[in-house]
Length: 422
Image (cartoon, rainbow, N blue to C red):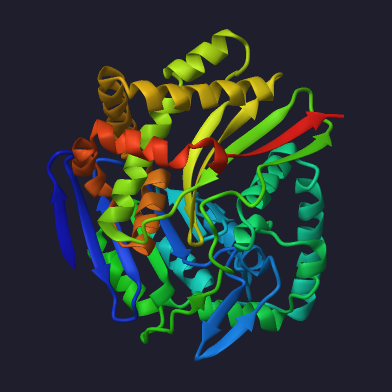
């Protein structure tokens, strides 16, 4: 068990890698009454083709999401009901890159953690329950296909990527999930839900030794083979297509634009790229940025405008968008902002204020047990410690941020997805 103290933020991190390969990260917070646990697997909607024992295997779209739905089933009941009956708040999610199961509780933490480790590591599927779930997920797929936020995002993924499966829905299609059987689920659980491909992150009023001991007792002893993933052919730095439009029942046009960037694979280099990118986005498009305040005053943007830097399934991308009555005007203004930075450079004062603001936002994350647990899980899969960010932020320079902007926001790299009112 490794103990690391981060003096600048007064946080302690307990880390352990079990003999079976499971990475455990714990941040004890004895001054709080609540605790949060996340048990995650490095397996998401884009992991459809993989290599195991020198053999390539193809699976239908939507298996990872289907598994998330079915994992709560136990022979003697449902894990959601068990956890809720003890006062816990459980849930789960599937992205293109990971699937995570978690709960927050103020009481019975060890009993709840035992339940979490048990149902996630012990699959229980029957042909009848799988067939029933196909109907439920099929209905969910049809609902999101009528959701403008989903359509504008999914269309942008198809603009950006030519082959990577992130361009497809995490849930799959009605046709693809019809191919999923209970044997498919058991097989993919065995492959991807082995401890060598998983991580456990815990934050709160917990005893780290008890957490580690429980994981040792309840999970498989031997490590499993971590499969090689195939995300298709190598993508270029340019989008697959520059723009896509659709019409739906919306009150005002919705838009999302973005660009691909070459992700640093892991470690400190990944963490530094993330921090540089997030500071760049805050400086360019944050609520106090010249770009946003000007367009907000002109009525081109409103409070729906958001941005993010996303890493998933071997990709990294910059996304931004919201609602606007004049999407073309927004994009012209954004391109003008990038051209201005290219000719005049960044304001040193604006950069320093943005960096301080970003540092403050990261401090606030320390108070969000769910966000902190997820950052620990993301770090475990990419081999970096998110708490190192507080040292790394101060080493990011104005030129680092300017170079990031100039490299990744050139007009030819941008793709745009728009949903217009019918």
